[in-house]
Amino acid sequence: MKIKAAVVEKKGAPFVIKNDIELAEMGPDDVQVHMVASGICHSDEALRKGDAVIDYPIVLGHEGSGIVEKVGSNVQNFEPGDHVVLSFYACRNCENCLDGRPTQCLHYADNNLSGHRPDGTAHFTENGDKVADMFDQSSFTSTTVVREANCVKVPKDLDLRTLGPLGCGYVTGSGTVLNTLKPKPGETIAVFGTGAVGLAAMMAGKISGCTTVIAVDIVDSRLELAKELGATHVINSKNENAVEAIRELTGGFGVNYTVDTTGITSVMEDSIEALAQGGVSACIAVTPNHIDLDTWNSLCVNDKAVIGVNMGDSIPQIDVPRLIRFYRQGMFDFDKTIKFYKFEDINEANADSGKGVTIKPVLIIDEDYKPGD
Image 1: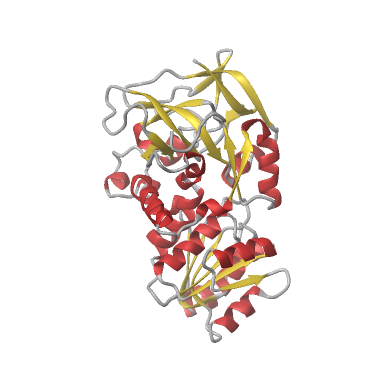
Image 2 (image 1 turned 180 degrees about the vertical axis):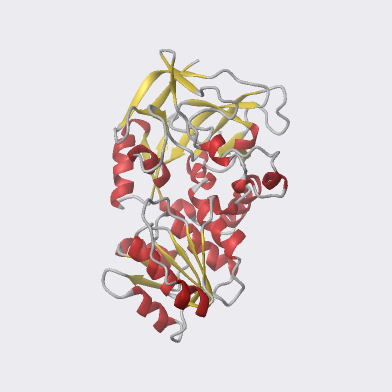
């Protein structure tokens, strides 16, 4: 079937809305989803620019939300009419998946970043030529076909337009704290960068019981929102030395945990320097940049750890409903970070995200959708 999709035709090119993209036929494990909305993530921009090896042309997008239209004969947990959030694909059969670690699926890169479906076939074509996909999902589309494992069922009474980013940005930031760092009540955390991922990590720190939750950024409006969402302290690192300020707030010791979402070399290094003895820093940005580590004085003598975390070490079918429960209780107000854009304004939305004008742009693909329908 022909669908509408935003296509990046070559490395660094803008998005082009096309109406002639051919969607692959459904298989027995597939779910066909009518797309309502999709968040734009910095990972989409990284692939558009070519920061990672990927094929072009490509349909990006991996924070989709929509309504199930059809299901394959093997699909057990979904039916037409279900509201779903889409996330990454994991095979569910490898050793790591069976051990409850789908973000470490041994076939993760092949299934999500290869540009084709897990069985090697093209997800999309144009005039018979392959158009690459992302996350076996590609949510910058009017309709897509995904595997059952990509889908998370969500309540129909919530605004489906806001929920898509739960499948990546919000679950990445919150999962890094809740699933990986696992701070104890009374411990301390600093988050560098208050975009969607950083604010999610910060809110998760508050939910975990951290009594000192520090947000670090260079944009005052974002820091004000961070305070509204639970930061106990904010630091504008353009105006003051973030490491010194964090030490002053913690009696000279530093924090137990840091999360860097910026991917900027100097900021990542500050996130490690700001740790207390035995602290852990999670560097989770998609970035081509590198850091310089003093392994003797920093890692060994001070017993610090630096870790990477993919997708918040999440199991989306568990973590997304958990975030929704937090949201209903007023503990995870992710919707305050969102601004809606028309699908046709995707390049403007992406630019606003890159400039920091908008924290989480969400494309409205179905403008006829009304919450509660």
